[in-house]
Every structure is written in structure tokens, then in C-alpha cells.
Image 1: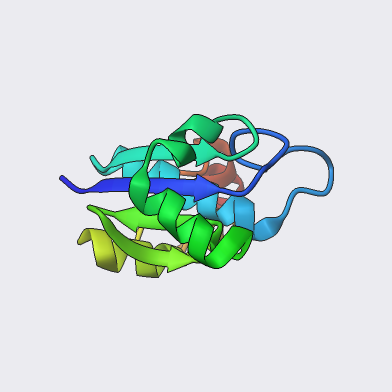
Image 2: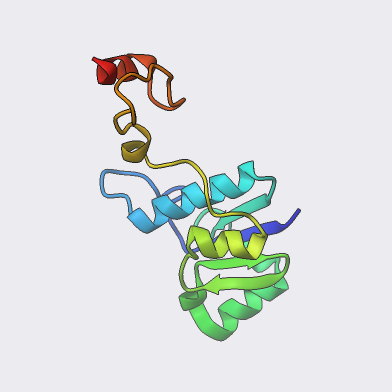
Length: 137
């Protein structure tokens, strides 16, 4: 399977998704990485503030930093080829490059929508049977 390497600018934690004002783009990208990992992709993620050696020891990454400065971060590399630099790719772009279908879990609002038939007692699988029973009443 593919190898995905992410080189992040200095962040407060390994994903940048912490604190009360977490960046939505970082949260979405962290979820996309988790999805890729669960789909069998070998995912590596490095933070310049916590793992500078990963940047310095990779001649390709080091060269990009020397040529473009910090503006090339975040840098997302798939099998040695740059997927994106200076920003995070969408889940769709990531999936397309990795050969994965961008589908996945439905949003909770869609998942827990009322049952299509008031007589149906079958659980949708994402909402508890109690919510289905309430919809049937």
C-alpha cells in the first residue's frame, strides 16, 4: 500500500487539534489521516517543533525548506511525490491520490435522521434502537 508522509510546521501537539479553538482544517485533516491509516495506508506525521531531525535527515524535505522556506509547510508526500505543499489536501484529494474511495462514515445528523417508515423497528446501525423505537411511536 501507499506511504503517506506529512511534514507539519511547528504545532502545539502532534495533530495541532487541541485547545478550545482548534482549527477546523486541522481537525478535518487529522480525521482524513485516521481514515487513510484505517484503510491500510502507512502514515507518518512529523512536527518541526517536536521532530526537527525528521526534516533535517530527509534530503528532499530539507531541500524544499532551503528553497521555499517555511511557506512549503505543511508538506504532504505520497510515495515520494509531493501531493501538496503550503496547505493540507482535502479528504477527496488524499483519497484520489491514494486510490481510496472518499466515502466513509455518514455525518451524525444524517445517520440519526428519523426512520423512513414509522412501522420500521430495525435499527440503522448508528443510532440506538431506543431512538428507532421513539420514531415508531
